[in-house]
Image 1 (cartoon, rainbow, N blue to C red):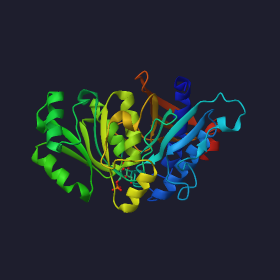
Image 2: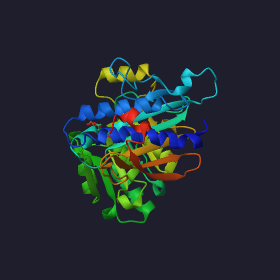
Image 3: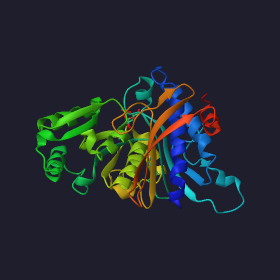
Length: 331
Ligand code: VTB
C-alpha cells in the first residue's frame, strides 16, 4: 500500500468519528456516543480510495450493523479498476465509550491499517498484556512475573523501582496484580477504561507512564500493537477466555494454541499505519474543543515504515466543510 498518501486521509476518518462522539461527551450515553462515532467513521471510510476489509471492528456481522468483522469498506470496491490498495483495517471508533459518556480523560478514536492478512484476527475476548516504550523494547516477558518485568524495566530506564509507574485497568480481576506491583514498590495509575491510550502513553516521556500491565480487550491489543510498531515500543499479549464459548470462537477464528504469547509483530506484521484523534482531553492527545461554527481537534498519524510521528492540529469550520457535515451531521 502507498500508505504515505493515505496517511492524511485516515486522519480525516478519526477526526470525523471524534467530532461526532465529542458532541455527546458527558451525557451518560455510552451507546449513543459509540453509535455516532461508528456511523461517522463508516461514512468517512467510504470516501477513501481503498479496498478495505475490517478485521478488527465492532463485532461479528450478526451483532454489529456497521464496521463488523469482514465488512468491505472504501470507494475502491465500487470502481472497476484494480488500482486501489487492498488493506486490512482495525478500528475502534470510540475507545473508552464510558470515558466519553462521563467526560473523563483519554477517550480517543482510532484506526490502524496493514496490508492484507497482517493483523492477528483477534477474537472478541480478553488479552493479558504488557506494553512498554522504546527504551524497554525486548526486555519484557509475559512468562515471567510482574515483579521480574518491573525490575527489567527499571534497569533499562536507569531508575529505581520506586520511580517506575505502571498503568493498570481498575478491575477486580487485577487485585493480585495490583498487590504485586505495590509490593515491588512501584507507582500505579489506575484507569477506568482505555488501555489503547495507556499502551501508547508508555512511549511518551511526558505522560510519566512506564508500563501497561493487565488484561483488557484482545482487539484493543492488536490496535495498540500497531501503534507501538510505529513508535518502536513493545507489547506482548496472551489471550484470556471467560468461558468455553469464547474459546470455541477463538478456535473458529484460527487460534491454535490458546496459551500462545503473541509478540508485537505477530499481532501487527509488515507495514502498518496508525491514526488517532482525541475525543476527551487526554495525556497523549487533546480532546475536541468546540467554538461557534466549528471545532478543533488533535490527531496523531504514524507509519511503521518511516517511524515518523505527525501530530496534526485541525480547525474545522462546519459550514464550509461538507466533508464533515456529511460524515458527522455537525453544524
Ligand atoms: C479494555 C479497555 C476498554 O474495555 O479493553 C476494557 O481498553 C476491557 O475490560 O476501553 P472490561 O471488560 O473489564 O471493561 C474497555 O474498558 C471498554 O469497555
